[in-house]
Every structure is written in structure tokens, then in C-alpha cells.
Image (cartoon, rainbow, N blue to C red; front, side, top):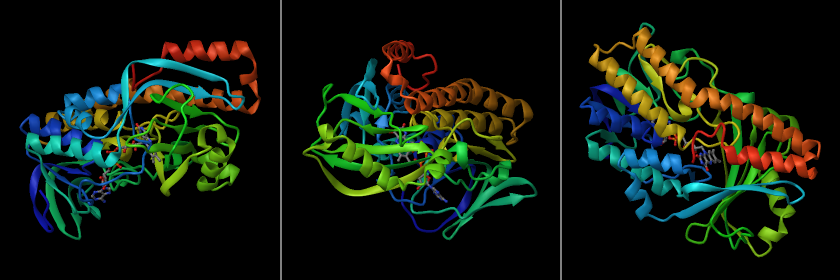
Length: 385
Ligand SMILES: Cc1cc2nc3c(=O)[nH]c(=O)nc-3n(C[C@H](O)[C@H](O)[C@H](O)COP(=O)(O)OP(=O)(O)OC[C@H]3O[C@@H](n4cnc5c(N)ncnc54)[C@H](O)[C@@H]3O)c2cc1C
């Protein structure tokens, strides 16, 4: 549904029809809750991303009824992930089931359409400028073409969410934020085969890495990612870091050419410093800061936390519309177990990788053997089998 001016009400208003918001809306509509979704963009819309959809994320999309549509569109298969060190040492593993590379213009449209099929009302081209408050409780949202009342609001509007202030949080930065640049490249070479996702741990990308992913319709997604505090300390622009990475790897980029522009965006990392729900609002996906700090992945986290937010809102609406203390505790516990605890372990791993690269420890065969063993054990892996 695409209309210009919206005034009305619903039990739940979801802000953002990306993977988090669409998942929340699907769960709510399936439970018979009256749910409306607004997004400032018109779909199909693009999103700056590496486009890597893990096998765990695809499982979630299947559960939401979007998987078949995603697989029917343009995509690449990923069978293995490899960490590449500055001396060329490669530490990899085969995935138990394939992952996918899907451009977000296709992926997000499929997830949004699945939400619409379940009965969620989606209003595109409708931006939220501010939440409407009743005392310290959120009771709706307003924008240039929007005036909406709701018993509960799910903020799934990505980085810099309008919902942060309502739960007492600031915009993330420093160790709670990642920054990343990406571009599409034609004509890559793949030493381990074309179904390989390569992650390069390099000296000028502390607490981060560069990636080369399999090609979709002849275009490979290539990018750099690093934690904002280390990025600021180094003082090298993201585009320069991407150019430097490409220049360091003629064996991969020798006959390659960049297609289109380099694009940059921010990644709010888990564990989030502060509550993710309360006062009539629930944060889901990037709005709540759920991205894996080591890998920069958030495509699994978005529908996962969207689903948790949808379940919390369904229970609260069933109990009269209040986010009661026991309901909030259940939500925070689910976030802790499925995302925050493994993310803390991932943050420690990130520091270890930084030291391994800085001190040149990757030159030691026993260290590489230990990393290989740890990688295959998948101890803290949230998003893929
Ligand atoms: C460069 C880069 C590379 C990445 N690579 C990967 C990767 O390869 N794999 C992976 O798993 N993750 C990756 N991520 C992370 C991933 O992109 C996000 O975690 C994911 O998109 C989060 O989904 P979301 O639904 O929470 O937010 P989004 O996808 O950002 O959706 C938010 C929606 O809200 C809408 N919106 C925003 N503000 C408003 C408003 N005021 N009013 C109305 N609507 C609004 C937007 O239009 C948008 O549709 C990457 C991120 C970046 C920046």
C-alpha cells in the first residue's frame, strides 16, 4: 500500500519496514493484532550493506514466509567462509548449509511483501519525525504526512532511531558503533572457488576487516568495516581504506573494475548500553544496536529481534497494552541469551584478532592451527551453522 498522507490508529505502530520492522509486523499480524507499518522509503529500496545473508538468517526468513521469494530472485550461494591474514595464511570452514548473497533492494522487498501478505498495513513514503508522548509514555508518532496513535510503538528505523530517547539512550558511538564502506566490483578472482566469502584481517583495519563476497549477476560486494573508536584514532577516511585494500591485493583485483560509487553507513553494535524496551516503545534491529561486533552482521539479528519485539507487543496488547515488568524482563532475557552474551564474547575475539594482526602472530603455525580449531568449533556463532 502506498499513500501520501496518513492519519489514524492501530494497536501497534511499527516504524521502519526493513528486516526488523517487517518481521515484527508479520508476527503481530499472524497473531491477529492490528498493526500498521510506516517507512519513509518506497520499496523496492536499497540499503548500504555487504548483502551477506547467513544460513541462520535464511532460516528466519523461511519462517516469515519470505525465503522462497528471496531464493527466486538474483543471488549467490556461499559455501565457505575464510579469514585471510596479511601473509596470505587462510583459515576457513565449510558451512553446514549454504548462506546467500542478496542485494538489499531484492531482499528487503521480499521480507516486506511477506508482512503485507499476513495482513499488516504498510504505508511507504511516510517518514516519522517524532514520537508522540503522553507523559513519559509513547502513544504514537508524527511526521510531515503522518499523525498516528498506537498503544505500542516498535522502532525498527535503523541507526539513529527516533525511539532511543524514549528508553533513555543516546545515539551509539565509539566501541558501540561500527563504520563501513562498500562498493560493487566486476571481474574478481576467487582462489578458493566462487562460493567463498573472504574476510581479510589487516593492519590498517584494527577491530575490523575487509571483505570480498561472491558475485551476484557479475558484481562482487567488496568493503571495509571497523569499530568507530579505532577508525577515529587512525584518522584515515573510509574510502581511502577501501582503495588501500584494493591496491594491496592485485592478485584479486588485477583485472577488476569498480561499478558505481563507494557507499558508507554506520553499524550500531551489541551489546547495547541500556534498555531496549519500556515507556510504550520497543527497539528492534539496528535501532536497538544488535549487530555482531566481530562480523558486523545484522541481517540475522534484525528479524530475530523483530520477532522478539512482535512477540512482546502481542503479549502486552493481550494484557491491556502495558509493557509490564515481567514482560520486559522476558524480552531482555531473550536478548541477553541470544545476542548480548555471544556478542560480548565476539567483542573479546575482536580484540584478540587485533593483537594477532598487530603483533604478526599469524606467522606462527601453532597460532594458525589454534585459530582454525576455534573457527570450526563455532563456539559463539549466533547466525550460522
Ligand atoms: C556497509 C554495511 C555492510 C553490512 N553488511 C552486512 C552483511 O553483509 N551481512 C549482515 O548480516 N549485515 C550487514 N550489515 C548490517 C545490516 O545492514 C543491518 O544490521 C540491517 O540492515 C538491519 O536491519 P533493520 O531492519 O534493523 O534496519 P534497516 O535495514 O536500516 O531498515 C530501517 C528502515 O527504517 C526506515 N526508516 C528510517 N528512519 C525512518 C523514519 N524516521 N521514518 C520512517 N521510516 C524510517 C528506513 O527507510 C528503512 O527501510 C551491514 C551494514 C553496513 C552499514
